[in-house]
Image (tube, rainbow, N blue to C red; front, side):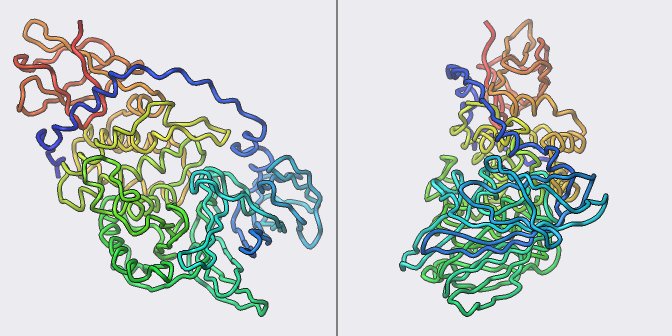
Length: 557
């Protein structure tokens, strides 16, 4: 089908947002960040990481809420890509490594901050699979403002029972367990066995394989993720939980839905979490089948706002619609659905199925999840105009403080604009393609062709351009790698419209819809950074740019 027409009247109150964003005084230039060797060790696939590929993590952790400590071990199975004598394991201080074993022998190592370099004694034959086991203990970093400033969260629920969770996006999984803490590599599968005091229940990723009372007042909850999984998505969620299971007939068959609210909130959860089904219907239609049928879908109440733990979505929005009861778009559209259910579940496709290789490309995760909110409004209302109204409304939160894309190789994310600016970038690309069937095919194709892999931003950009049939590289350059909002400069000249892009990267050539007569339909023009001529009606007021594009406009002097 063709793109749904978005009537100007629906967006009239938002039409000036792009222009106003451009009219603001430029922000002061920021000092370039200074990176350390620790940043490089964390963010680079260096020589002590690149010679081995993780195939399986076997993680066992005992969690002690009484004194906020943990202790456990992780057996890392890996395939040898090339011979080497030293490997890097990441475990953040103040956690302590007790021992490292391979083939029953204790290995020595040297610690450099959060990285441990282990000297190997046994031969590491090419193509062979080896296992190294790290035993550790300590008091993990406590989260300050999870999930952004994350770590371990030690709380009590409304009934006074212990309530514990992890959330470590950006900070990294090595804040609580030892691993190769690099985004570019995922194990084929993982066991997560968490031991907690009775009567606490622990919910982690994948399927529950067993519950084992240990005879010492603790119980071990063993979970197994049978799919490739990003390391920051592994989670502990331990508390006094209620549980029920439902079944959803989806694109790929019957999907199990497991719900884990706090026991005190079961009644409200049974009603409020019904939003899960329309969410799945919408996203499967736009993005393709839910990626983890083998592991199921879980929604788990947590003592933090929320996060995209693969197959185990963390929920802490207090059973309110909006974002903590607020509409981030300012339009009212965001108050008819629960932000955390929609946004975090969208990450199952964009973050968990398609995972960034480097933190600099976190925009892949957050831009698409933000854009999914727009699509959900469209699904909910049956109106593309309503979805557009929502995403345009979020522009008020764009700061243009630094580029959306971060710096590669040093674990450095880009600006928080990866949410709202990134969502508006994708919305603009939908307009450029001007064919909803093709756009939907691109979104589904990304998940089919790049799913269950780790990717770079360049991979995603190239895929979209290729499937769109047009080179969008300058559009990506503009919105991901600069803080400038492009401005369409125009003037009337001898019965024609003259126009060009300014405040733009060299060669910026994004097509855009405009009109020069109020209430007339928008027409396409194709400006470049040089003056071009279009034959449009030139009577009436100022040139008006379709507000579906995040740009400014001004009459040339």
